[in-house]
Image 1 (cartoon, rainbow, N blue to C red):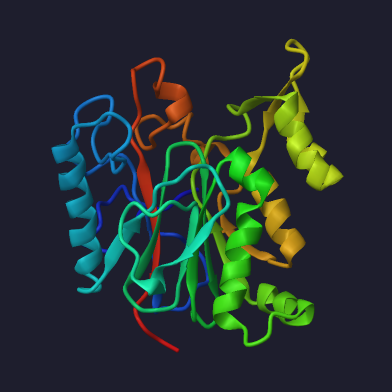
Image 2 (cartoon, one colour):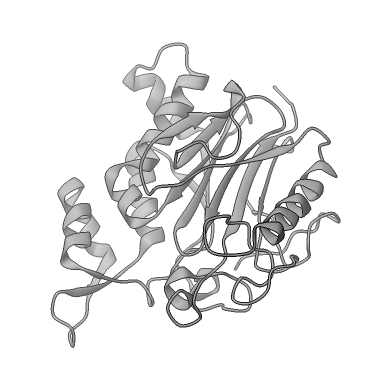
Length: 283
């Protein structure tokens, strides 16, 4: 079950990931609580592309930055322009908000890898020594097209002198992953084209699509399980967070999580949560 952060600067409803990361690596997942936006973006909407008032989004992002800086004064969340792709950027290069990418990696302290979600799956990475951190935005399209493979490639590039298959496999064995809230397996209905996209990569993906007997050609998909399968194929075995149970489902928990699928049509819009990971220092 998602746990609330115990860190005083963070809203009590925000999630502090429970994973075996080193002490100098910290992570955070906001909820919809703690901001100023009006319905249907109430209240901590961090997305500047969903129809919310720009001044409210600015205030909400400032609140997040202030909370981060209470723990690390130089911390700065970098908001990507996410396009459901696979491109990964290196935040050590001094990039600012708005860079087009769906994943990011950093080794420098205070570079806060940040992903926005409202049904898509956020995935965080670090290693047992906490030498680097990374975050990926894994909607079904990005996940099927290889966003996790892309971010792990960048992770390897930052940490390995030689990216040989043996070295990559060894790094994968010491890599930690945390999966945040996303649309759950009882809410995510997809068509045959989605199933085909995953099964073309790995036929075992079919295990995570349950056919709808009353709706031919439709399936219930387990996005978190599909991500776990892709991570495990890379050699990453230490995976925490979203276990596909109902408490992690964005659609099924309207008081805590934004959900584009649940609210965009019914209410006219949905906000975005942020999932962040950063280093304080360390090795």
